[in-house]
Amino acid sequence: MSNLKEILINKKICKSVWFMRQAGRYLPEFRKIRSQNQNFINLCLNSELSSKITLQPIERFNLDSAIIFSDILMVPYALNQKVEFLKNHGPKLEIFNLDKFLKNNDLDFIKKLKPVYKAIEITRKKLSKNKSLISFIGAPWTLLVYMIGAKQNKDQIDLKIINEKNNEIDLILEKLINYLCLHIENQIKAGADVVQIFDSWAGLIPQKDLNSFCYVPNSKIVKFCKKKGIPVICFPKGIKENYKVFNNLVKPDGLNIDYNVNPNWARENLKGTVIQGGLDPKILLLPDEEIYNSARNYLDAFKGLPYVFNLGHGMLPETNPDKVDRLIKFYREY
Ligand code: 1CP
Image (cartoon, rainbow, N blue to C red; front, top):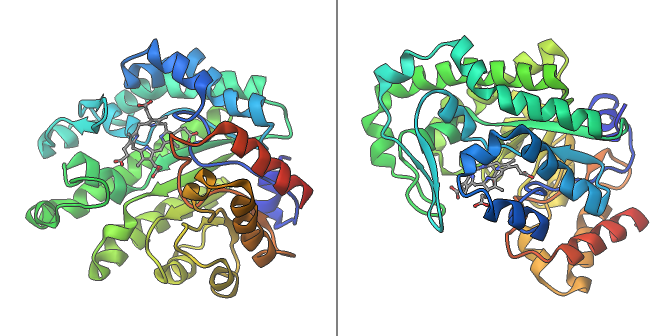
């Protein structure tokens, strides 16, 4: 069993490190492939290349887990909503159409995602047995924000759009939950052994809607995973002290904290789950001593507890890979 699974399932205290967004943007070997593949969706659908990119950070840093190179927006793509990634602009999705969305079916959905499952198969064969292959999905709310075009700029959503669609939202979330469970099941069948749920925009949900937009959808997916024996890590980014409510209601095997969650608070308030991450990715842009001091904060806080070393959000594109290498060495020597 991989050490990540040992920690999540048996709550074993052992070392395990991987980083969100470890494959991609900041690695020169990724940039080279990316420059020859302008269409990002097509790159994600190229199973050989996707597998190669997944393994790049493992070869460079010998991390304990690989995360499959794909994107959360492959799900709207597979639900027949056109997705484009524009240079310096981020993702652009075709205008949402409820009737079209409701016409989707399981078989076509799986068929469109076959290349992702194939990439997982190829990667599992190449990855050493003691390493985890992590699959992932975007949480229903986070996907919905992109699908109905409610994402404005960096950290804002247009609540007007959410309110206008209020009577459709529950239906869309419910359908998404079904498709996402299907996507998880197929990723696991292909050879992934853990799933992480990215609720990147959970922090933008008004307090009154947290239950129906965040806790309930995540709960339903976690229940599905538990029924199937799939270890699951949740990442409801930005919900502050509501992490405690989330943990008590959703009860995932693992909970990734973001960089605004104090690790000592997390140790006292987030019981019964394995904590993962927390370190601010911006710290990796600072001098080494500051990186080590910050890492030490997390390692001291979770001493004697099962803890997965990781970041509090994705690796930034401007990160120097040599600093990542030294951080991993620091962690292993700690
Ligand atoms: O231009 C490029 O080269 C593409 C950059 C890129 C990469 C490398 C995007 C575009 N997606 C990815 C891969 C990716 N995305 C992975 C696999 C690689 C890895 O983790 O090692 C994963 C797990 C994701 C997940 C993802 N995509 C999230 C959740 C995590 C998070 O960072 O919050 C989100 C929100 C997305 C959407 C997305 N994909 C890409 C962009 C530019 C965006 C939009 C981000 C935004 O709206 O701010």
